[in-house]
Image 1: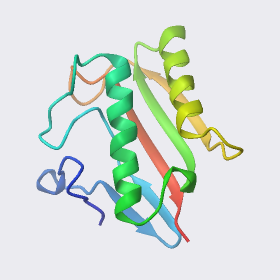
Image 2: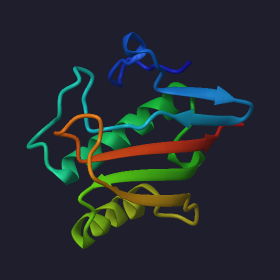
Image 3: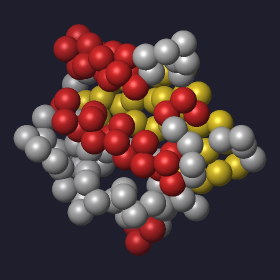
Amino acid sequence: MINPNAVYQTTALGYSQAIVHGDLLFSSGMVGWDIHHELIDNKGFTDQVNQSFFNLNQILKSENHDMESIIHLRFYVVDLNETKRSIIGLFLKKYFPNKHKPATTLLGVESLARKELLVEIEMIAKIT
């Protein structure tokens, strides 16, 4: 189980933030919460995407890896539209500016686990 202190804790809820199986790391869906289970800044879509990526990066750092280790990302976006697609594209270019580009899946959904959540991101990373 991987539950870094820099990411909101979930073990009391019955799951871990990530697990390792062989040379792969699988994350739970990361949302825009800080370590206190609160949304940051103005709680908008861009802020939530930013915090979700921050949380993913903290999980990787806890295992001495970085974003280059990611081989797949899956996005769940509430009320997906062209603006939100573009924002996600900007973040992908920011975090993956070089040749490494992970496979991605982008899904539009009606809602997430809490009504204030607008995006959730899962990752698979190769950590050998």
